[in-house]
Image (tube, rainbow, N blue to C red; front, side, top):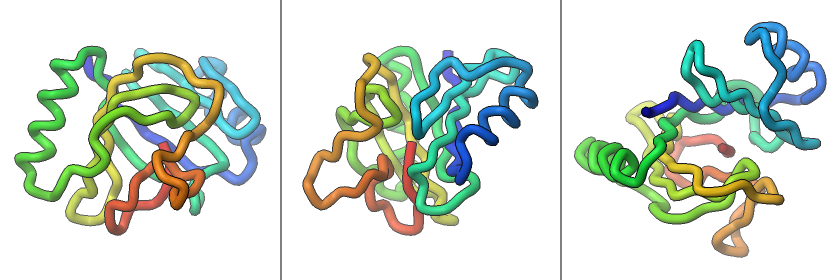
Length: 146
C-alpha cells in the first residue's frame, strides 16, 4: 500500500516536534538531532521535518511504496508525465537507505517516489562530492530535502 510523504523544513526542531505531536496526537516514530518523522495511519502519511531544508515550509512531497513493483509503477507514471525523471536508483537520505525516482512538477515542486530498504546512521550521503546536505537532486525549481 502506498503512503503519501511530505517533508517540511523547520527552524526550531523541538518546538516543531511539540506542535506536530500535539496535532497528530502522537510522538514521532523517529527523532534525530536534526530530524523527526511520524508514520501515521490516519491519515496515511509519512510526515517528516528537519533543519536541512534551504527554506522553511513545505520542502517536497512524494509517494512511499512498499514493493519494487509499486515503485516501478509510479516511476513509469512519472516518466509518462514527460517532465524528466532524475536520479533514479539507490540513495541515503533522512536516515534511510532507499531506491528513488525524482521529478519536478510543472510548478517546480519536487516529487519523489521511493521504497525504503533499511535504516541509515547518517541523514544524507551525497552521491557526488558537489552535492550539498540536501537529499533532493538538482531538478530545476525544487528546494532541498527528503
